[in-house]
Image (cartoon, rainbow, N blue to C red):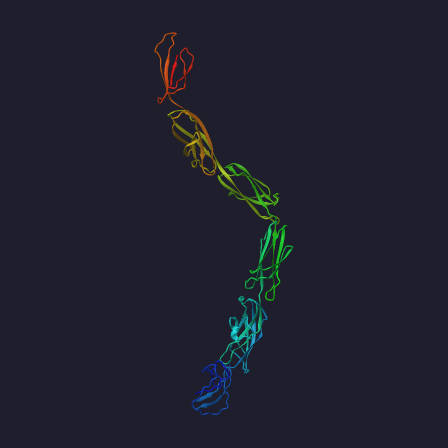
Length: 530
């Protein structure tokens, strides 16, 4: 059949078909937003009736039958019913990140009980007089729920991104098949908690500057600037203002040991809650470690290591226990002033570390010192005989060492008259020997031998001297026979092995029944003797 209906108001309108008992409802004809008639072109044959069509449960008001054609009934359907949304209960003030409940009513102008539409809760910084589309522009959705028996009860969450201030709670009831939408928008105040954080040296030293730094942030972690902070450090009180980063700082000079209470508080504002934080720091006197020992020592030699703990005036702090670790040895506990004997058995750099853990009055301290441990060597030189020009020079001797240094890791420099002539490795039996060749020049020679090793070998040296003399040839002529009382003339020459004359040298002559006489050769090496 054909149905004629009248649209009573603007909006999305629908026609619903139901049985006489209200069952089996069906939506069959959505229409536009303008009032509209569905014209009946065939003249219907009306059958009068007074039977009303009952209201279908949950689908809104239904029209009444006005007449039927010969091919079916013609019904007149009413348009969607206007509603009114009213928030009846909500928190007046809420904290960022918190939750709350929004309760309210949705009523229909025809007094029917509303069920089914969805109510969405928005928050926005708008005016109650703004149109709905303006109110929802950029709004934050915080919750939603269905209308049940004309009421709604919705839990909402206030995200940290909202910021603080006065906002509108906008409850929007959605349009349904039978009801028009509506809204309600009471105000709400969004506030934030605050958090003060402080940082400083928890164990400041007497005489040092003690700096307390802090910051003030809201619940979203954003800095709170231009906020007044009351700060107390011990007995001193300060009024500070946060900068654009929410930060503040104050320093004092610590004059005495003991516990220092630090307290910072923010009184809050209309939109920010108050906050307070405090902590205790302990001020102590500084201490220092004094280590006295020689800069170097020899392997297997005992030394004395003196350790002291000193106050700021370099006075001895008595009756304090500290730990001393020498090289790789296990640490030992000593008290205040210690004189520790120690022997190193390996060559190298050794470290002495002293740690004082501190106590209620004196701060902890550490000290370190290094000592060079040298492996000594000893060298002996075999006796060198005098030589004649043309003879070969052989230098030999023995080297001993101590500690972890092996003699085959050492070498010997041999110097003749201060000039290095050779470097020789030490053999496995700790000896060395080196030929320096033939010495062709007569004279007195000094040979020095010096041990060489790594950075931690203590060198030793020794020296010896010998003569190199030149070979000579004396040629002499004399008569083979003479008479008693007759003077005999002897003549000759003195030359080197190479045949060169040797002048200005003394020759000693002696004979039977004659006393020794000294004759000096001439420049050409010749001589005569009567």
